[in-house]
View (cartoon, rainbow, N blue to C red):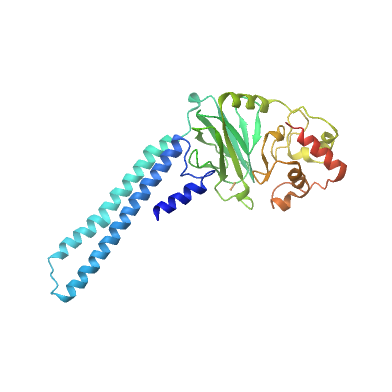
Length: 321
Ligand code: CUA
């Protein structure tokens, strides 16, 4: 049963499983999980074994005279195995998890890392700002592979929780404070993350990717994200006048709205709506005209654009490379 359970978890965890670790922190967490699981099963086997043993003895005792000398031994077993042993075991697990695993999953100090990303949880998407550069992105956070990155997590509204199961434990985004955690990936790849604190209607659609790139690819990505947008065309005027600019920022233009994601390099992302839709022209069009159907309750109103205006706007958004 345990093997089947593990296989199922590992199988569905290709993208988002704490039992398919890809960093030293998540490896420690997974080992702790398997140790606790093993000890729990051993404990269960012991209890069931003792119950079967007692049941068989009780049946035998009904046929012969009941001796009383075993009562003191029974009492010692109850106190020793039922009270002292569990207290010692649970205390040991607490110390191991608290001292060792919590320590190894901690954020690197600012002096020990060259990269700090400030991640802000919004209902219902993630904003990422790269400290020391003007790069801002949403829901797709790039990091260099095999490099400890300090992530400082905060919120713009309610409590959220930032969790990339294959890379580290979860960290809460609490109003009025910043919590920090380490992001580190052993291998190049894309790791799915998810808000794991219920935060309203679209909590489930508050997902994100962490993309671990080779260092030179990451440097190029960061440099291009830091640049302002260069796109122009008739759609730019539509964006500025149709109130898109009140909520979204496009660096290099007058649009600086803080409500929705920064769209300066929209086309560098693979999804829209915090991994709700793929980033294609058709999906973008659906999002602009009827986002409440796709993700009910989100902050984006129906823009009531169609025909030539909508096409011009889509042309402009698709040019935001
Ligand atoms: Cu944000 Cu759940």
